[in-house]
Image 1: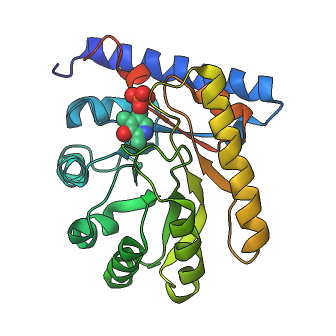
Image 2: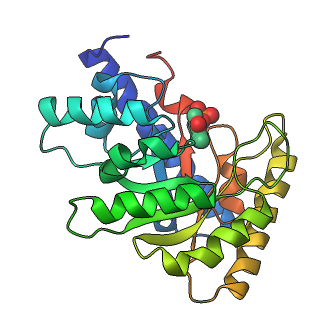
Length: 243
Ligand SMILES: *Cc1c(COP(=O)(O)O)cnc(C)c1O
């Protein structure tokens, strides 16, 4: 759908509703709402509607494909310079796309292999940003389903051990997804396992920052917030009525 004043109003309403639901979930979890950042996932829409989400107040945009970030970033620079936002990459990043993608990112949630970590470190080193250090989260596959993305526990250990030699990466924590067919209770249990795993890693690698947890999407962010999520990645709920 093309962007109109009507879509701007709907997107702003959706944004407000999602933010209120996140605040409510934080209250139920006994947590401060300031601990949780909503990543507005813009993969379902084009740059015009993405801009309307920024105008509604969303300052962190999530995309799962590098090409979308390249294209939208350029469009927003040309058409909406001055708007303030950052990109968070939440999907698998191919190594050969790191060099072009990394300079555009505020954070990479989906670091899922040692080879990618090395490529991202090199790309961050060569990026022209004033501080050549990129925030990264390690994407863990907790359910060990074959079709799932993310690294297994052995690989997480391998990456965490290597970070000392990758000075352009700044670890912030873990990212995970619940299983596709999980109900609310199962999703909560999986998020709880991620939190426990994070606590274990924090004991094992006390010099690294494990404070952030990227967990929860439109269908399960309440459960994720109950289990300590600090980034909820919300897509579909933000675009009801416009796609
Ligand atoms: C699409 C996507 C989301 C958003 O999911 P919704 O169910 O649309 O809220 C979150 N995380 C990742 C990795 C995604 O690809």
